[in-house]
Image: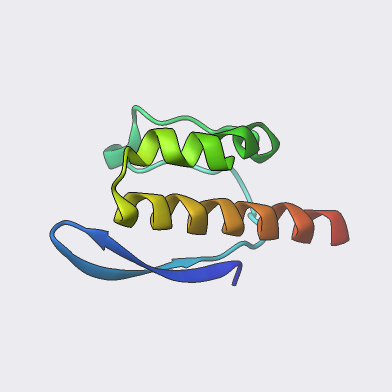
Length: 84
């Protein structure tokens, strides 16, 4: 497990669990995610700077907290990749 944090989504509190693991074979995205694409996680770190979080959250502390948690998970994920 990479991380776990509460998040407010769909009008209620939820628990976000983030995992990592090996993949065997080709990864296929579900039909629900056809507009999304794979990104290099190293390129995402700039999205979670304190300045970027403040700009995206626009004063909404729930959004700011969620973005900080995502950034922390990204940092943990990248650190785990270095140990592989």
